[in-house]
Image (cartoon, rainbow, N blue to C red):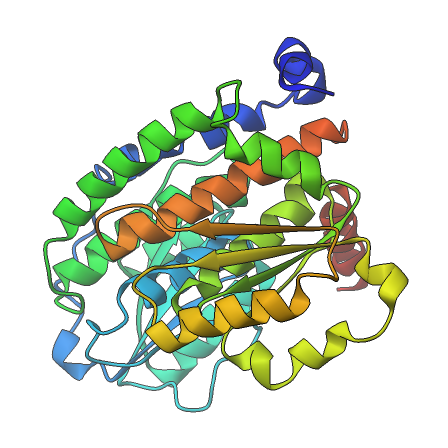
Length: 353
């Protein structure tokens, strides 16, 4: 299937219009930057000694992005917690962020209950559900975001308002609004490029080479969140299994795993994601590792960030990955929106409760 066939058959291939959600990412970031923030006067920022961001799936990626974007700026440690339980250190000196797009994520609701018991300060972000009800009843600061989307398609809403809230309560200094504006200016032209026919559409060309393979994604350390996002989007949008790891860690173990299963290696696509501002020794490791592994995979692809600040650089590669996963779905005639196996899992878990 070529690009013209996808264009002509998009309504049949993508009946719930995931295309619009991906194409409109720049507009979503702009809309997210205009969302009203809650009154946070009840939050004592001087008391905060650690931040625990609780979420799952698409709601957790926003926390990963904040931790990466704010690295070097946050004066206290921050972790992303994907679990029913909280770390033992959570207490009155913790800020617990509850992130659930639907408002009904059971792991996140469990973390909310534990945060209350631990006496932590609590803020949240959601579109509806039990999270909204409990926050309203307890008076916790809550960012209300638009509903009706797949959580993975609402990343701008999960990320941008919470960055602004961190800035508002004094945890994240700097001119956040400038970074957001520059990110929008980076993403919109990229989105136009990835919707066009021709050689400049690297998203379509890459997707065409990835289908019928198992993508293995390696990143520099500061782009690990991007690798996680690519893996998740390939799984949910294109129903493709993918794997990810980061340098330099994979040089100390995983690189040895390429020596066996030669027939399987012929089905692998190798993807490198890097940032020019990564440590020079890490980028040199990428070059050498690529040379050592080059004879194994079916294809190899290298992508660098674009943009003028850390936020725009992170988002530029996330946006490329979203487009690649969308094209990979359409090329395989997979509807990119439903997540039937996840829904079935949730229904069976509900039966056992």
